[in-house]
Image (cartoon, rainbow, N blue to C red; front, side, top):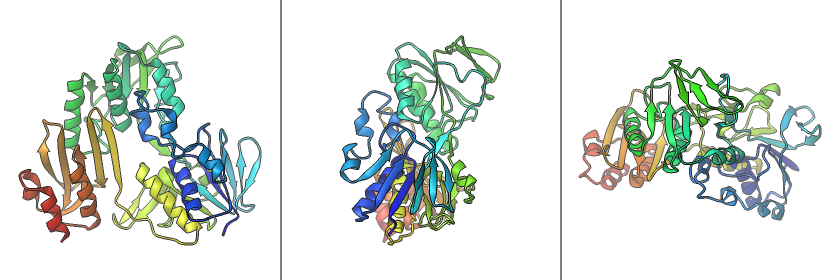
Length: 410
C-alpha cells in the first residue's frame, strides 16, 4: 500500500477520491492540493441555486469542512502544483516547496476558455467557474441591469434563466445557429429557445464572433460581431472549458484532449493516476475514448482510482449522463449520440415535458429528457443493455414507456 497519496486539484473528483480511500480502509497519508480557499465542492449549483442566492456556501461542500480533519486528510488550500518530478516522485508547489508522493492522482479539472478580445479585463465582465466567480457576479446583479451573455451552452442559459427571474434585462449572443448546439439535438434546442423567449430572454443566434468590450474601467457596451455597439452593464462569458493538462504534459505524460488514462484511471506512469474532467479515457459501452465534463464522471472515476490504489482494480465503464436546471425544467441526458442517429420525439414540444430518443439501427444510444425522469432513468438502463426500440411505439405517448422498456429489457 502507498504511504503517501497526493491529489493535485481539490474539486469533486479529488474530494471523492479521499472519501473513497478512507472508506476502503486506507490508513496512509492523503494530501489534497487545491488553488481555491475552499474544501472540495460541487460545481453544478454555482450557475443555478448558488447564483440565485438559494443555496448557502456550506451546502456546496462535498463533505463538511470538519470531515477532513476528522479523517486525517490534509487540505493544502490556496496552493497549486506547478510541476511533477517523476524521477524523485515529488511535486513542486507554487510556494516553492516540494511534496513527495508514493502515488499521485491528477484531478486538475478544466479552466474556462477565454474569449481573447479587448476589454474582457474590465469590471463587470465575468467568467463562471468558481465560488468566487459567482460571488463577484452576484455583486453585479440588480433588477434592470443589462446583462449580455456570450455563449448559449449550459452555463450561459442557466445564468440567463437566473438573471431574467431576478429582474435583469438579458440578451444571449451565440455564434451557432441554435442554443445548446454542441450538446443537444435540434428538437431540444428549439424547445429551450421557446422557453427562454417566453421568459423574456433575447436570443441572438448565428452571430459573428464578438469584436470587443468597451468602457472606462467598467463595461459600458460591447461591439458585437456586426460591429454594432450594444449597451451593457454586465457581461458573462460562457464559451466552454479546456482540460488542465499543463503539468502532465510537462512531465511527459501522454495527453490528447485530456490526460490519457486506461479503464482503471492509470496513466502510463504506474505511480500516477488521473481522474475527472481532465482525463481522456476509454469507454467500453461506447466503444471509443471520450473526455467528459460531468459530476457523474468525476465521482465514478474517483471511486475507480481509489479502488486501483487500494489494490482492488475495477474497470470504469458506465453510461455517461448530464443535467441542467433552467426555470422549472430539469434536463437530464443519458448516453452520447452520433450525429447520424435517427431521432424520435416523445411528448409535446409546446409543453413543459418531452424526451428525444437517439436510435442507431433501432439501438438506443442516447435520451434527452425534460421533466421526464422515467424516460431518463429507464433510458440509462436501455443504453447500457444496448436495447433496440420501435420508433413508432416511442413516438406514441399513449403507449406506456415503462412497458416499452420492460419489453426491450426482457
